[in-house]
Amino acid sequence: FHVCITSYKLVLQDHQAFRRKNWKYLILDEAQNIKNFKSQRWQSLLNFNSQRRLLLTGTPLQNSLMELWSLMHFLMP
Image (cartoon, rainbow, N blue to C red; front, side, top):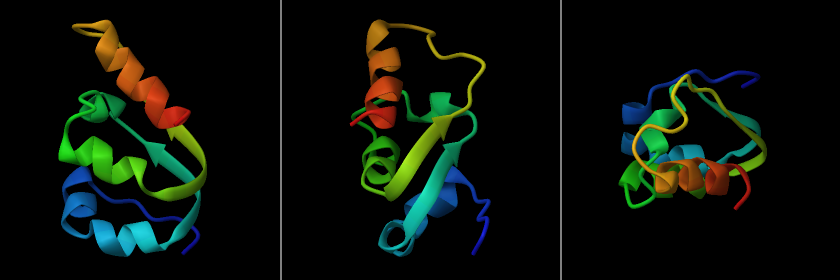
């Protein structure tokens, strides 16, 4: 596929299929959905093979610096 647009829910349901692919870009909209580094969503997406990652969010920091760390670590593991 040249482009695959999906939801966080579907990625979690089929994470093994998504993880097998080598992605050129992994672009996440509403990136605040992965601000908790202990969540299954964050850990699953972190293991995806991608050359580049981009996070889109209007609220990078809401409650604590750990939320910002989660986003930055996702970009630069």
